[in-house]
Length: 276
Image (cartoon, rainbow, N blue to C red):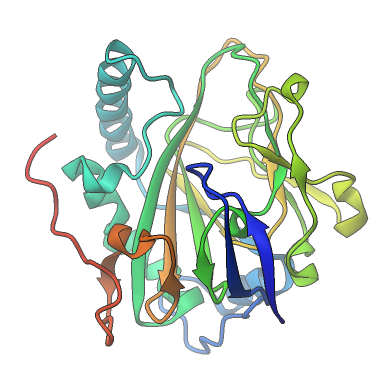
């Protein structure tokens, strides 16, 4: 299905773009990091979880790095959701986007030629009152076709108490869903809401221990409640696409080749930032 629709990218700019909004299942038959059952689960359910990437010592170092980055961001007038496209600014985040253990999982879903183009910390401070309404990533991204995957890396433990992410199992098979602008009373971190999500499938809690990841399709319906606990809940979203996906609105400038090649040179493939 190809369609024109009004899209609201993360920067808020409106544009009309012709896009292919079908789910493309993984065709990888000999996965090297995931199991065949996990690839099948991704195709069926739209996500796979949990996968251990970093041990306790490694994730503690990553958390310490983020704590310092967050402190600097807050001091500069930002908030805990402000650290976006971080791989083009911070060498340590670039390293996480290109981390071979993470990229290996993504390759098992998207194939050999992969770009990493997004990195955004979603840090829910204790009792900050902000939710992430039910949405599809594809509604925010000017990419076509929709062969993209989000990796959610748990910096802190994420569970139902501190508002872990939730998926609607199988909702990626419905294509692009109708959304509405979020109302102010929703206190939504983003700006779109899809109502009555349970009509598309069963809700699943994405409970992760720090250092684990989940992976989900850009068409999967997902969101999270406000964090009403006394614990922080921070995750780093890392965004990937097959290298033959095309980006509009200049978003190809965000792309870094993390596996294989970009035969057409569409993605900018910026080098690792030299400083923090």
